[in-house]
Every structure is written in structure tokens, then in C-alpha cells.
Amino acid sequence: MKHIHRHIMVLSGTILLILFVAACGDVSESAAPDPGSTESSVHESSGQAFAETDTEGEAEDDGVVVIEMFTRGGAQYNDPIGVHVEPGTTIRFVNRTGTHTATAYHPNNRNKSQRIPDNAEPWDSGVLSGRNTEFEITLTVEGVYDYLCTLHEAQGHVGRIVVGDPNVFPALPTGNLPGRAPDFLPPVGEIVSRGVVPFEG
Ligand SMILES: [Cu+2]
Image (cartoon, rainbow, N blue to C red; front, side, top):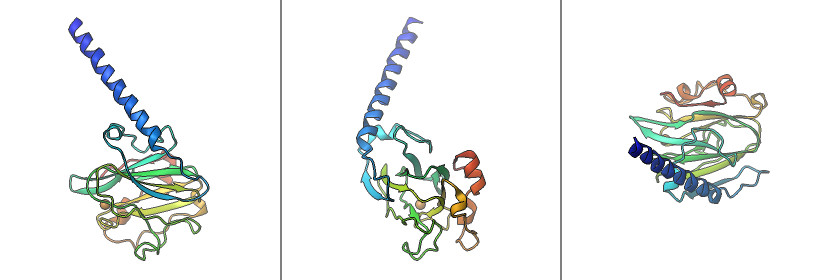
């Protein structure tokens, strides 16, 4: 019994250490983006400490919302697949497995049809191939944003972000999207009521 107790003590010490390291990694990570504009940047995360954090779309301490990108079980997807955030929120795409992009539906990006608010800056992460490679955007214009992975759009690797009031720029019909893309954009009502819509396959 005594032995088990000691084991638990050691274990919780280890967990505390991991949490501490993760927290420190976070602080150094969060060079705050200019809240007044839509900005993009790509940078490599420093590594293993970050891998311990799994935020599943919930806001971190610094208010950043994390969307993870996966190739797993023959599927390519983001988790969460839908989020509702306040204007000015920074979204951090983190590539966990496989090779992906996070790309706004916009004519600037491979002549895709526009599916983000009129005054919003389109973004394109470019190819994220390293594990834990990150890309951040800060979204200030209210409305519904649809984005895709340029490598796996037809397989349904797409996502939706609702910023503030969805009625400012409502969701567009999905009928013209290729392949399985329409199947993986959650309804705006579900995103707003749940806040975060996890990927469910
Ligand atoms: Cu992809």
C-alpha cells in the first residue's frame, strides 16, 4: 500500500512537471498578433512540450483557439471541424499527422469561390507537413468562414468557423463544392449552439 502511494506521488510529480513545461512553452509561443487586423504567420513549434497539450478546440489561456489537423484511419480531417468565436479571436491550426493546408475559400486561393465575409482577408497556410507545424490567423470580421485543405478537399477535409454574428455574412449553399466537401461543413446553427463541433467521422 505504502509502495503504491509513493508511486502515485512520483506520477503526479511527473504530470505537474509536464504541465509546467507545457505552460512555459505556451507563454513563449504567444507572441500576440495585432488584434486590429487579419494576420497570418507560419512557424514551427518548438516541440515536445506542445505535444502534451490537447486543447480540442477550447480556448487556451491566451485565448487562442486550436484546430488540429489529422490523417488518421484513412481520413483527413480537422478537429474540431466547427468553432464559434468572438471577433478578434486567433485561430491556431496545428498539423498533427499527415500533410495538409488551411486555406480560405476565396478567388485569391486557386480561384476557389468566396465563402468568407466580403471584408475579411483570405488566408492560405501553404503546405504544413511537419508534425506540430502551426499556422495562425486572427479573424475580426463577423460572419461565416469556410476553409479547405487544398490536398484533400474532395475527400471532405474542410472546416467552418463562425465569428460573432453569423447573419453578417451567412453560410453559402454547399451544392457546388466537390466530392464529400459538403458533407463535412457543420450547420451554422449547430456550431453556434455547441460552440465547438468535434470531428465525428
Ligand atoms: Cu488535408
